[in-house]
Image (tube, rainbow, N blue to C red; front, side, top):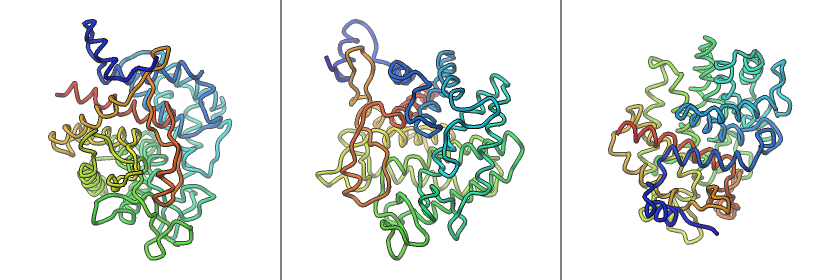
Length: 379
């Protein structure tokens, strides 16, 4: 029997049990995916950001709970992909999406000392030094997408590269990734809404590019979400006195404050196409909401946003919790998640199917819940 979260909370409270805390929701999401997939079988069958974002969330959950089964699960997946010589079993070295899971290697190396993780980092991150770029120096998102910069790309390459610079004393990576972030913000920000377009083609040659600006036509929720999430991860390893940090902090502040104008008043969620909530065929989407909530709460924790913005984060958090259901085994189901999506027009985004417990949606949910748990502890 399917039960929504409101029913579940009512039953639990009627039995004298409190509703789950944010960290308990994070664990429920981890457990749901762990029960569905042996780590070696997490889709897709390669070293890819779908697993990377989910397991990044799980890693943060492990740090908060200390439960070794989460660490062991992460390690088993990584060990199924990273060979003992540090080579990657199956990945595409010309796609930023297949760089991102490398962020998991830092903790594994720190905890185990196994050289495979060290070697894999020294293979993966230096790939960025030879990455193909548009005329302004912006990374192509993929080899098959010449000159296209996507907002998503900063999450795929930024955190792993900045942490590499910090860990191994190679400050060139700081400048490399702050340059990418500034270039992206400069060219994708809309001055009227404060929002960021999904992508930018400087050559204006791809079908979706505006013939004058090269911009994508819409503000897609999840792409916008990756951008501040990436920057806040980068800030954990970027020196405070770096020449670009203040500018990037201002970009995060501006974007998150702008997003608040588009939060749905009734539900607390954000729309698939963020600025068009007045259209009847637009729909509320959980993964972008989770990323926005995570970023707002983390920006408050870091002191970049005033505490008053936590009201919007809690509203978004509760909005997602209110959509949750459970299967016959009482495993949580996170729905309203847009599947992986390229760049297109409004109709393209609106027609995208949704999924349940999709890895990047579950990962976004876990990231949100862990950050809201930290907020709860600080309040």
